[in-house]
Each structure stands twice: as structure tokens, then as C-alpha cells.
Length: 470
Image (cartoon, rainbow, N blue to C red; front, side):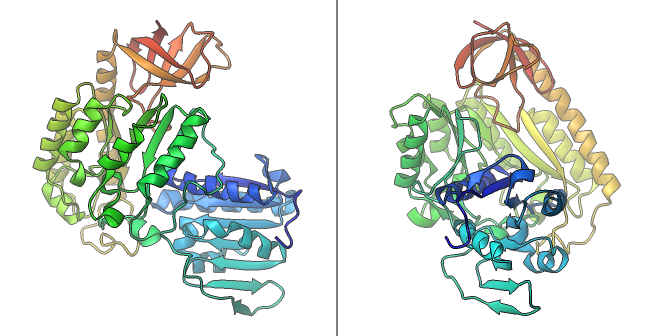
């Protein structure tokens, strides 16, 4: 492309969730396919890109801090183009234009496929906004902005396919596969539908083609992701089709695991439970974001679940999938959360004894239904409730891990301790990448990342486990 030299280098920072990481990887692939070299050293980069997150306040603050830190390389490094990509730009385009003159381009969540256009324009000394409704080019030499043209193919719901160039940033033995973009749920606290639009699912055939390529390259763990994986396919097949997708994936003739993440309870049906229970390639791991356990809070959150339906589902999952590991997330401090409602959540955690739990304090996000709800909870109270639940869950997690002592598991080796060379770390089906703990295998000098080895658990700790290879 005009203005982009083949000897240019780009540096990239990806923030937020795994779904955002996939967008980063396809942008990296597009840039490399146009001759741009990639560098991990921002001081060497001609182009710096931050793929931002705007899910909650802390994520927005991290995004802004990262952008400002990289902006320093315009003076101390080679940077000629600083680009804000992803959720923050999608949601706050005007504020970023007004308050961050360091930024040369802002591209939204549905504009990753046009990263090269943004780079080309910024290298010509212009500021560019590519969001979805229209493109704007600002000539930095004049105060006037000229509207470029509208693009119907640039919206918040764009999703890649198996032919899209992609450079995976995960280790070569594990990969994320995004099966759908956007979300049709309208939870009162969540901005994702505002940022990424309605759900758009990829065809089964296209997902199977991508997974076939990945496992042929040595990937041992496929992590299926979407904002709501259990609702996969509803938009294109007129019914939730995750089971049909997985039935096709397990037919791929190769030795690999499938892990299903972000499963909403609503469509977690009997057929899916039976498939997880009986198909060896599927990890016996259920990631089920529940958010709360009091019916009144769930109703205010616009969640379709009740405590009774959640408990019935958890009971059914445990009964039909022996040894299943269950992960969930919960929010404390949702507007109007009384002490009684919090105690219900606390009792739920104590009774259900989930394997992995993430606790979040409520983040008040503008344009969501929860933003203007009465009885907003004081930050100090939210923090107290957060720490109380984390303390409870830490003890539960330790007790569960201690109960695993003496049991055997297959472990996917991830890395070797650089200081203690006879210890390697990995994960079994019970631990998802990046969010759960690890299993440390003592006395293993031979195993390397990507190997699957059988171990016996020696000691269980709060998050991690110690084991020996057998």
C-alpha cells in the first residue's frame, strides 16, 4: 500500500479478554501479509497499536495508561503512528479524539480488517477514525476534518473466518477459536452488546476448517470462545447449535482437547451435558457465568435465571459429568444489593463449592440499564463484600485441591521453571489457560511444552497443585 514500506516494524499491545486477543492476532496477520515486520520492543516500532478493552472502569483505565505510555515512544523511539483499536475506540471515539492528540488513528471493533488503511493514512500525517458509521480523515496541518465515505461492511459485528491471515500469540500447543461475535443478551450491567453488536455466528464448516488447520500445526488444546457460546448458531441456524458444532469438531482425526468457555446457563441443555460427559475430546470443564444467586438481584440484572434453576443445573451437571470442574463469576455491589441479598450469595458459594470463582465489584457503566438504578452501593461496602467472598472461596478452592491428592491426571505441559530446571508447570482438563492455576510437576527433566504427561497429585494449594510424573 502507498506510504507503507516493507521494512517498517509494528509493536502491538492486546488488552482484555481472549476474544479481543483473537482480533489482535488477525490484525497481526494482516499487517505481516503486507510486509510489516513485528517487534516486541516498542522502541523499535514505527507503528504502535493498542487493542483496548472498555468492559469495566479498571479496564478503561488500563487501556488509557497503556496508550499514554506508548505515546512516549514518539519522542524516545521511532514511532510515527499510534493507533487505538478495539472496544475503547468503538465506545469513546469523540472523547479520545478530543483528549488524546497523541493518537493518530482510532479503529473500532468491526474495523480490524482495515488496519492497513489506518496505517497508510497516519503515515501520511493524518488522523483517522474508522468506526462503522463513517470514516473521518483529519489533516493535522489544518483544523478542518474531511469526511471520507461510509462503509457498510465496517460494523461492530464483523468476525474473521478460516481464511483470514492470523498470527497466534498463544503458545503453539493452545489456541482460541472465536465461534461468534457480539451478544443478544441485555444484562443490565454489560456494555458488550453496545460495543460489539448483536450476535453473529460463524458457519460450522468454517470453524471446522480452522480447527483442522490448527491441530495439524500441533495445537493440543482448542478453546472455543464467544460472548455466549451456548447461544452459538441461533442467528444463522435459528436454534442454538453448539452441540452440532462440537459433534463435527470431535470428528477431526487428531489428538486434541476441546474446552468450551463462556457458557450461559439458559441454553446449557441436557444434550450438551451428555456430550461433555461422553466425548473424550471435550474437557470436563464448565465455565458458567452466574453473576448472582438472589432472585431479586438476578431480576434487576436482567438475567433469566433463578437460584432454583441454577442449583438444578449445577446438580444435573455434577450428577452426569463425574469429576467435572466448574468455574463461575459473580458481581457484588449491584445497585440495591441488600445485606440479605449478599448473604444469599455468600451462602450459595458455601453450599455449591465451585472449583474456580471470579468475584468482581459492580462497575457503573454509562448507557447500561444499571447506570441509573437507585441505591448505588458505596465502594467501601463493595470492597468488603468482595474480600469476604474471596476469603471464603480461597478456603473452598484449597479444600477441593487437597481432595485431589493421590489422584492422577493427564497434564498439558506449558513451561519449565527457569531457576529450578527439574520442575515443569502445566494444566489438566480442570484448569483453563490464563485464568486458573497450574500443576507443578517435580523431578521432570524431560517433558517440554506441548507434551501431555500423566501425573499424580502430591499436594493441593489454594490455586495450584504439586505433582510427580508417573
